[in-house]
Amino acid sequence: MKEEDVNRCQIQEWYPKFKTVSIRTVIHELPESFVKYLIDDSGPFLLPLSISGEDALPNRIHNPIDEEDYQVSEGSGDESEQPPLPPSFPDLELNIKESINTLGGAVFPKLNWSAPKDSAWISTSGTLRCTSFSEIALLLRSSDSLVHDLCHTYDSCIDKTLSRPPSFFLALRKWYSSLLPEMEFRCFVRGQQLIGISQREVTTFYPTLLEKRNYLQLLIKEFFTEKVRLKFESENYTFDVYVTKDGRAKILDFNPWGAFTLPLLFTWEELEQNLKEAENVVDFRIVESQCGIRPGLKTAVPQDYLDTGPGSGWDQFLRKADEELQQQKMDPGNGA
Image (cartoon, rainbow, N blue to C red):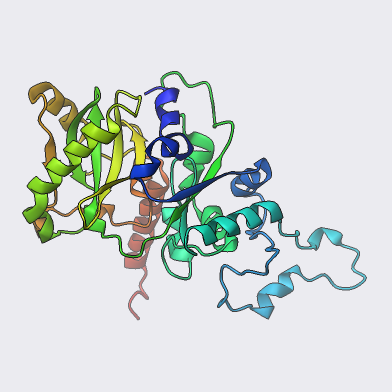
């Protein structure tokens, strides 16, 4: 994989070409001050000061005891204990507010490559649905997975010369509450040839897909041939597509081949083998029964960036959990 393949998968690069076959999106270039705010973890967690007085967590309870930690006694002379002032991005907030109104009042945010899916739990709705700049800032600032976009995007490139792109963008995508998770699919393209299609949400068995599999395979294959193949320049890549109730395909995203992209119901080795053994044949895979679900992928972490390898955050978490479990078993007071 080369840097140019990764760059083509940035939403600000591909969306203008596929605007007519994607969902409504407004894209803003982010000021470097806001990018630094997202990366900075040296101080306390602070949300930007909203010029319109919006609060991403309107129902939160303020605990006076906690707030005492930041209070300085009069005449103490210790100014180092003064709480830092929250940042403010008034121009960006106004532009985002206008875009949210343009898109119907609700959006979900996404940076160049990825969305902050791992921080959806912190929002008042438990989803990526946002109606204000404050809610967007909360999701972005709370997300660990976006560190990939901000700091590690090119780590898997064989010609790596960059540590990050020169500019970051915020894509605001229209929120559709009626989208069905079973109608999203990941498509695998090798040598500009569609070789595989996988159900995107693999933690659930959807019987309706068994009935529609031939129809869906033909529809997606025709969509790729007519709308995608000659427009997307990379030889090898994946794209996510959504099929609407009236039979239209909508592009949701593009991702590089391999690296941090999950093959879902395939393995990368299987996809390579399919290309060698079955020319012009598309392998369409869905969860065909309750026994075929992949519950291991049912996490709050974005599926594309799930890392359970040695030394990873998940590896350390599981080791710590196991250590605590063993300690509880050894504790004579356990269960008292």
